[in-house]
Image (tube, rainbow over all chains, first blue to last red; front, side, top):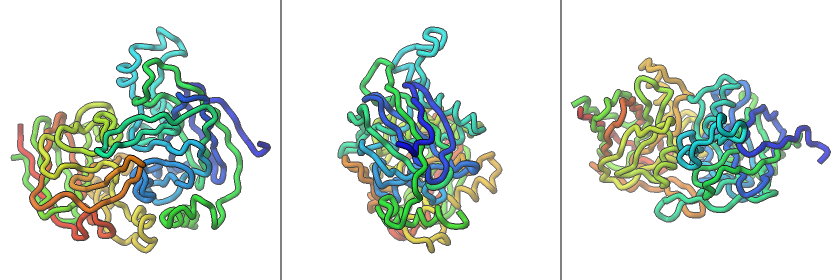
Length: 235
Length: 201
């Protein structure tokens, strides 16, 4: 694709953070079934405004994200739109792995033992990246889990379901300049007891602004109003 | 008794819950959502974590036996008795801005839970700001999640006099908005008072 401005590989266990400018798209491509990306989103330069899981879910009457859906900020604006998704389900409700849960799942696997093949967990990765923007654990709210499917049964019991596979793609378009924080680290519910996360390919491209018939805008009347708020002169 | 207080419809409440105390919320007239946040006290950087709580119990709804987990992986409170049956922690707190998205741009003037949270933390000088207000519990609120991933605000399953009781496992701060929402059935279309009580261990 000629309009790709940036491309990199996020190794299994790695993390990164960057500002995705308005009307630029971030595409994540899973390297395998063990790709799982914890994602946080903040409004760039105004990080007191951030992705809000409950606001996003209740506005769209869904417990997960997929094509046509949007990540809303706590101020009612669209930060990111899911413009392309081959996977069909990205978890929003089950959080991330901590150091304690990683230790319980994999046993001890430290830098002293394994150097850079050490186990890295999502929470520590997210805290490190938040720190680079002078954000702290107070700013760490519910994350999106790209490529992860956690579904409830009729009684509300949660279980992991196979979802990611090599080549699965997720594209997020920024509707406002957005600080994106990513950690490619395993979800605590996955069935693998060894630590071997698959890599993820990241690319960023400039894309056209959403028109009046954009599928994310027209998906629901709620989305249309959130786009109005993002595009307002007082946004 | 540490406190025994009626929170009028649409008002807020903030109080310390010492470790070991029993804390009860009573849905006085039925179907009243009670938007509730907990913080470790006095280090409020540690707080109630909705996704950690779901992860720990591998279940969406809260009821007797649910451990309310902190962002640092500690049990903050345990639900010890529940005459309602289940409570929500995915629906979040209503806000003027989310009401604009959900219902209409001209709904911004309507009173909302996050306004109450902000006024409580602004007037009580407990060192909290907006970024501390995470994803809350909605006691007595019914937000079914289907196996297909649907999520909706349904009619309440609570009733007059139903209550939920918890034991504080660590010193905690409780912050409540007695929900003023009038745009959906979360309060039975008529917000009503709730009673909060706490007894020392």
